[in-house]
Image 1 (tube, rainbow, N blue to C red):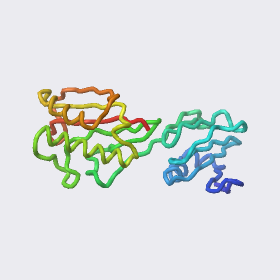
Image 2: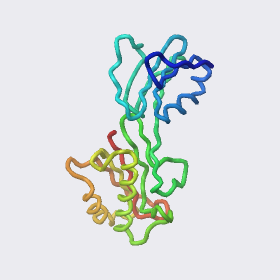
Image 3: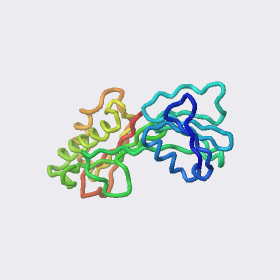
Image 4: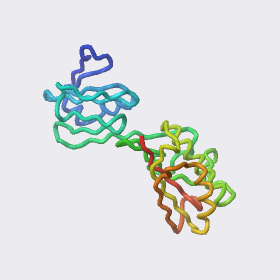
Amino acid sequence: MQRAELSGAPGMEVITSVREWKKGEFFRRHYQHGIDVAYVIQGSMIELSSQGRGASAPGAGEPQHHRRHGAAGLKHRNPLTQEVIMIKEAIVSPKLAPPAGPFSAAIRSGGFVYLSGQIGQDPASGKLIEGGIEKQTEQIFSNLAVVLVAAGKSFNDVVRAGVYLTNMGDFSVMNAIYAKHFEKPFPARTTIGVAALPLGAAVEIDLVVKD
């Protein structure tokens, strides 16, 4: 493998190893650390803009397969396989209880942030809080707010919500608390009655946020 600093482009490197591209380790390691990376493979260059940095429009000299979709939503084609690669970034926060399964609290990808469903779980104990639908719904929005802050977003950026209730008779109580967190135009929403939820929760809510 060979690496060399690009002339006039501090913080950028050239990769001439096809094997390293296929493994993808260099890409993941450097992109996650916020370093711009340029891949040069068999004469083709793909430039990736790291999260938080502005993405300028492609210049006249850039290759046709060069695409920018901004931050973790960047999408391009592997010049070796023409496979479309979508970058995903996990959103984490120490203020939340660790996920109880193989999932992330949220994922940023393709211009959106997708928040996993939250229940009325106490972040400190990991247990469902007491107090029924009202207290659980309030805790859910507290948990969702933590994830949104970690993603640099707010409830004003939410475009869709999913609500899951084990008892549709709890809808009015949930809805009253829900309404306190959103303004017009309200996000799209689907409310579904379900047989059961994790930890015996009465309600679960997930969100989709425009990045």
